[in-house]
Length: 77
Image 1 (cartoon, rainbow, N blue to C red):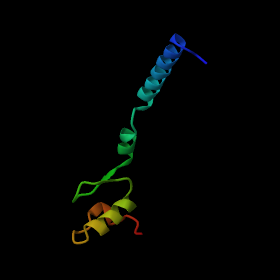
Image 2 (image 1 turned 90 degrees about the horizontal axis):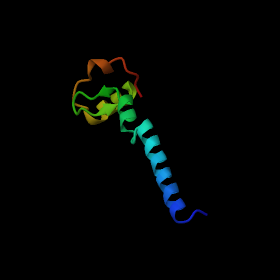
Image 3 (image 1 turned 180 degrees about the horizontal axis):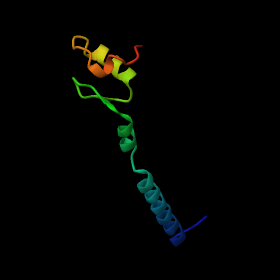
């Protein structure tokens, strides 16, 4: 087991390595998740990943609103 100065150096080295890895891949997955969300609801501006989910959302949350043109050809559930 490392003791004293060796332990401190080992911890610093591990922290630097972890910070470097986090910087390379992006510290959080928000940016990657945001890229996957391509459709935006015309009423509430909620982001959806695909037209099927968008259509489900629109039919459930906005039943009185007319269906947008981009959802007319979307698959139904």
